[in-house]
Amino acid sequence: MSVREMERLRLRPGVGLRLEDPFGGPLGEGLQASIVLADSGLPPVSLLPTPSGYWTAQGLPGLRAWEAGEGDDPALLARLFEVAVNDPRGRVLPSRFRVRLPQNRLAHLACPGVAPGDPPIEHFPIPLFAAPARSVPAGWACVRASVRELPLADPDKAPPAAWALVDVFQGATRLATGLADARGEALLAFPYPEPPDAGAGTRSAFDVTWPLTLSLRYRRQSAASIPLLCDLLAQPAKPVARSAAGEPPVVVMGADLSVSLRYGQPLAVATPGARALFVQP
Image 1 (cartoon, rainbow, N blue to C red):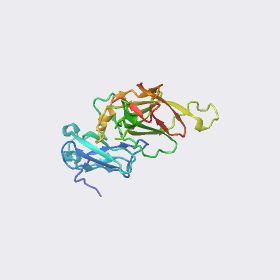
Image 2: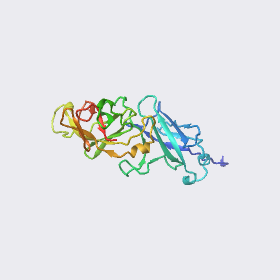
Image 3: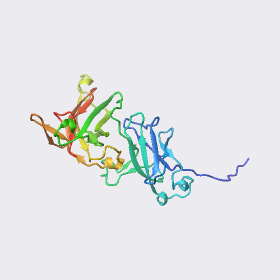
């Protein structure tokens, strides 16, 4: 029996994107994400997770013709949309970012003014950051920081460096990037690096240490609202404050901060002689 094709429909999602869990893999269950035409005042549309770990939505303003399969040049329909991400389970910090739609591929985060490669201009998948109270996976290193602003007139009253980015390096390799929350609290977690003298002896794993460096990127921003992700990634590098000898300690500015990570022990980084990590706003 012959079959005659009467009609062919081509349907496309208005948006497809992938959100990156800092602990690896996609975050789906329990995460909330929505998208809205930027600065339009329209109600947001919920993004729905797919079984393969992507997020998608249809029925977006101005994109119905594209979703119906009409046209092949997304530039002719380009509009700016804003995505908001929230995690009621407290695994990742809330985030918001803008993407230009439609795209013929998964939506990328393009950040004008961010230097290529550090971080990349295009982010795929789109990064999320661990909340400071999140439990760290077994076998992963844990670095915590409470980031505060200088000057150090009264360390206990120093304002939080809300939304500061904290990077941890082993040599030239970035192991992890963490984002401070509105209170200046940051968590970084990553698989332990290869032991520096792997195979050289039979000592216990708990005796292994790694020399690391920590750096900060910061620009003062309101703690009352969540900045756009591109604005966070564009924060300038700032020297980490360190302590010189004195009673009480005198805080001086340096470059990156050298720290030592020991296997199996969480690392709390701070300006020596203080209870927080201080940065110049």
